[in-house]
Amino acid sequence: MKRFFVFTLIALFTTTCFLLKRIGSVRKECFISHLIVVVVFVVSSICVKGVSAQKILSQTGFENYTARQKKSVFQPSTDPVKIGKKSLSIFSDKLNEFHLWARGLKTDKPIVSIEFWVYIERGRQSFRVSIHSTEDDFEIDAGGPYIGWRAGVVHCHVHQGNPWRKIGNFPVDKWQYVRIVSDFEKNVFDFYMGNNRRTALAARPRKDLPFQGAAHASRARWFVISAVEMTARGYMDDLLIYEGEEPLHLAVEPTAKLTTTWGRIKQQ
Image 1 (cartoon, rainbow, N blue to C red):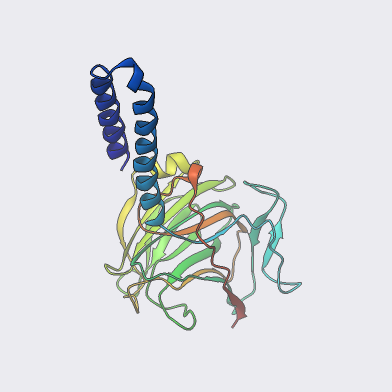
Image 2: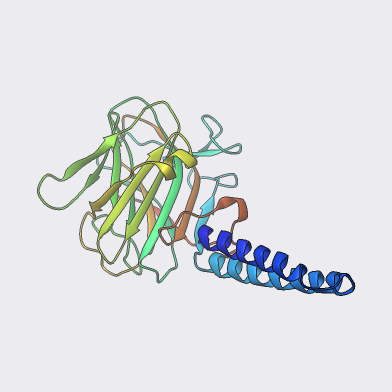
């Protein structure tokens, strides 16, 4: 897409120079005015098409987040924070209690990208994230990526063979940027990470990692954070979920309507 913009502008500039040499000085000003209008129209049309191709499904910096329960394991935090004044603190050390924080997604596209800042304190087990395709509600064993942090390693869970598979080493007590691209037709996802968004997007990803199980449908419906028997507190900041596998250019964000449907926090 970027190359197309460049080639288009070069072609228009070249055409302008060529024609200006062949028109009189009287007509030159009028011609330039019309040409500017054409250029703006063409470039604007291309940009609008590029923006509409990807829709933001959910976006939050947790600035307005409040816990639904006083003793919820999902609490707004002012320390540590990566962006703004708040982040989401996640911690539950209770045995046999499974806590979920969920956000509903509305899309018919098979590929969904999820980005966020994450901070994992030193310890053993921290929280997990997953993406599900069930329609009415989410199930913890539903098909989709299921990713967790444990003892300086990020890994994924699958319902076959060795259940926990290492994705890579993950630094503790330090903010990292994560991007997960899930394909609900192929039942695989790609995992990116880096010290910031720029380095994460440019990093070589772990590609074609398996879903926990086959997706129930070829689109995502839920993004879920789960907490159970944790020994390492985790934090999340600046969550962004959108359609497609191409990274959004955040300098000029689409003005798509944000999804505000929330799943209830559950305990089992």
